[in-house]
Image (tube, rainbow, N blue to C red; front, side):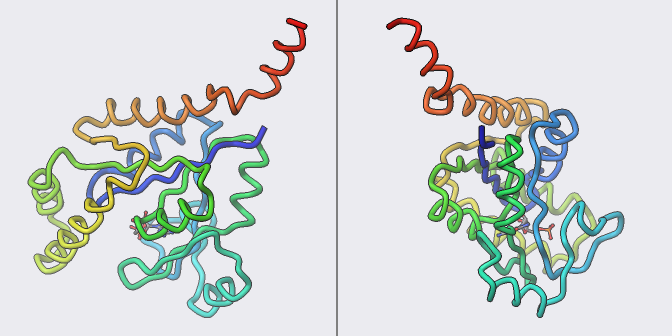
Length: 202
Ligand code: 5GP
């Protein structure tokens, strides 16, 4: 059986990466697609594990070869989901998370209507603002830019199938896992089982 595809997007600073890495650590049958990006690796990031780090010409060549299911420019860098890699993962039967921005989410919803989309939201905009300021790592103008972007991202939330508010990491993680697991119980995903049950009743 092919694995299901889950698009996960959020407003910057909502804890999406933490939530996804918690799920991946605990559940080997849930995997994340490793995106391609033209941004430089941050400390501790490995090529092939966190991202495939490529040059702008390499990325543009992949666009030309129709190698991306979706791609977008986020914070002045390109990010994209490789079609081939996604197909390989779903063929293995694992559930695949695409941790992508709202522009990419819109493209995947069009291309793969069977994918489930999940938006992770902060409990309120005020909480998000204080989280971003509280990090203490970014300059005020960077924070101001992120807040404008976060507002635009939150405006897209109604377009997603599911909404998970991250007020508590454990609760939000459990909600994500429930959504992912529930898709496996759709009767349309269990045609073989239904078929043999029905055959017995004849
Ligand atoms: P970061 O540079 O912090 O790792 O990611 C910046 C943003 O790019 C995040 O919102 C992340 O979800 C998004 N992103 C990462 N990979 C992809 C991708 O393959 N496609 C799209 N559209 N966005 C991505």
